[in-house]
Image 1 (cartoon, rainbow, N blue to C red):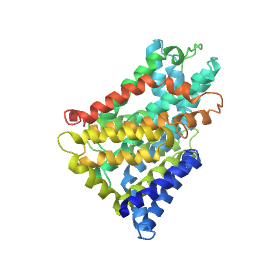
Image 2 (tube, rainbow, N blue to C red):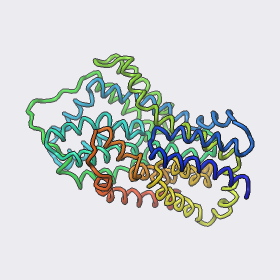
Image 3 (tube, one colour):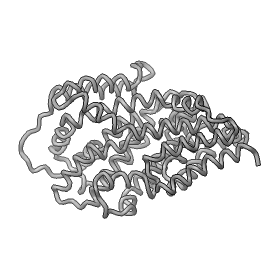
Image 4 (tube, one colour):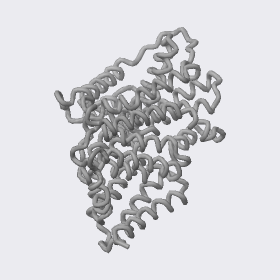
Length: 424
């Protein structure tokens, strides 16, 4: 057996056994990825290659800085009470269908900013959940609603962790610009969000029985709107106006909110803590990818697949890896599917079209949604302290929106080049 296959068996063996033993507990995923990286290096007879293990995460550094800055900004919006006031304002909307869409978007907002579904659960999901509970809505429906909002938030622009992961495959192991994903992600996710909201109008369109008008705090509102405006300019007009990525907008917004009522340096640090585990997983994945390249695993993959990626077969290869990711991820959660997503994008290399990469990234997001343990349902039920709601109940409610997203993802992979007008 070739050495590369032995190394691959060692690395994936550690991941698989580790995920089974830890029951896909997300806090162990980064440790398992790093352990597999070290084991792979040792199995290849290269010793512990600190250079590659440390260098790998740099492929994600730019995007991670944006996620971290957004996490602080979002956390301060929550801790200053702005998000609570914003929800009260949304509840004043009379049109039920519009209100349902706005409430789901409200839950999704922190995820859109950061790419982290967990932040939706901790902040906007908690606020909406409390309102729903006060209205006597069943806990199972609350869990489903918050889980749906967190999923859509994770997949919406500007920051989408699955797309950030998939984009790494376009540049092999080198840093790949996460640019041009705004409109493709919006096209991929927004239709499914609207579909879910319209299917669940009765649950989402919460009645507001108070007659008092709601005034949003001026300072926080101005900061919020300025950051959103900068994000839209960055996302929709990148080809004309480049302002250095979203990191700068989120960072400046966070600094300003430190001085708002309820804001502080301590609140900013606490907000950053919410992003530590997901970012640790992202960096550990970078190490894992780097070691697979160093030990020749990626080279074997190229030898086997690249000659077959002509005449439209590249898209077929991507779809096959996406399907494999969904099957594996159902039982073993995100780490292996996240790795496979980078390999799905790898054949198109530096010529990667963000539309195609967005389509591939949907597989990672759907794995996080549907996985039996350690995924979004586990996280939502745990954070909302719910022990009675079943996985099947929550997943069933997401089937139609997920199928729509799957269909759009396949279209993006198959027709990415003709759809490149979506890339701003």
